[in-house]
Image (cartoon, helix red, strand yellow):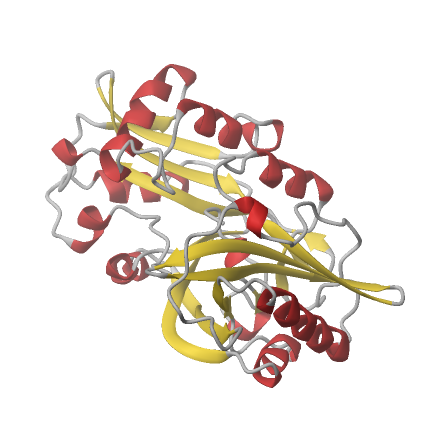
Length: 346
């Protein structure tokens, strides 16, 4: 899986000229919608098959839904009435010791090709820190491409850890070239069983609040499949959130989230074993994959993966944090409980 593209590469990786004072950085307004969508089309293409394509409906469903409308920070670069850049920070709350933090995730940062090299991107990034009153934010997270990391570090971001991909082949015939399956081929659950999940109290964990979960479900694209696998044992339950992907001629199933009712390592180990057994019944799936924090202070997940023969790969996802009013320990890698489902593109 490639790195999740969140920052405009050319503005960060190449040299920049002096600040263009004619360009104004300002909060987004509704009249700018068409021009912002056009920036997405310019950057990623307007093809309906693109995973990062953004239509007007997608934009409104993401940012104008009740959950984000009053929380998300949307900025534009204006040259007169022309939108030449866009930067978003959307509300992405983590918890620590039972407290919900005011944390955000940096979304797509876009600069029109006609305006690159004029420090627009840097100004969009720095805008919220240069106001008279610092916003009520604990920290901002991001998942940049490799070419952007150096410049972001110079901008004051820290890189406490990278998520590391692990894979698990699931059958003797799994690496024979397979057709691309359709939704009906899967026997996995299509809807989640909601329950009160366990989280390690001393770690930064993405919130499991019902309001946040409902908003995320509501903004998913209808042309992308998601599945769930549930493992029950007595009164305990483990839920895996899964997303199919096509890698060349092979099909994989990505584990994006794991929610469990108990911190019992044996329960997690058993649940992963049962997941492998269930996925093995789909003869067209070559492997399961998951990206994890290798140094998380709760070792139960990496231990369970090792016991169930997941193999570490050399693929990673960069994870960066920009502190605003951060709690203690945000820069320590062992304090983060992260999976790829924490990203906005999941």
